[in-house]
Image (cartoon, rainbow, N blue to C red):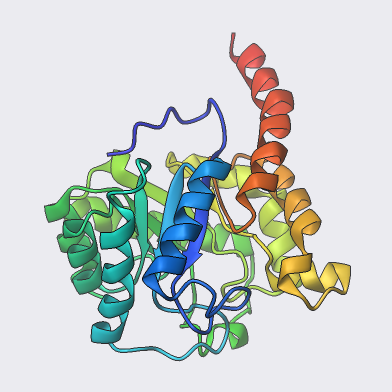
Length: 279
């Protein structure tokens, strides 16, 4: 379980992609020893969660087999679990991978499909009794960039997440175990991503902690005219500030050391104000 006190500060989920083809760091940490070094570096830099992903979800990414995903993910979780004392998340849409990852020492399941790709995901999570991140997406990584036609992007995200929360709780998942994610960059264009930041507070109506993953993403590159994802750190910082000021509880980031400083200052400004307004 997560011993997080929601609303008191921003929590950081450090990204650990153990893939050869992720958009900004593919191939860097897909060997267990390199993954362990990076996990320890993320934890030392201030990560509150390590998010291990074996399937790239960048636009156009090809789906790998469950067997290959298991091979990538389990070898890393098994080597890092004894070495770090913060929660480990597994970034997967497969209930099989989710179950084996949790049994190998992971604590959270981060499902970019919001439980829609695998019909067994909700029953599996209910039986495991672990936190689940439900993200909004349309289509899949191969098709999502062609599915950006919304009448009202936030209302449609909210409606989808509300439906999935209901389906999850109906399947036996505890409400307090659900975290929501609007899915920045997943079937959203530049203007829609910006609209999500402006109106993020509207998702508070769903009464679940909100995770935002904007780190190094292409909308930042478009604004900055910066093709190199690793050179988008300060654009990411601006997006993280906007997310915090509009209700984010968790930020999923690559550059943990820098975003820890960003979130500490943003929290000092925003959350102290919020506390005073509540008193």
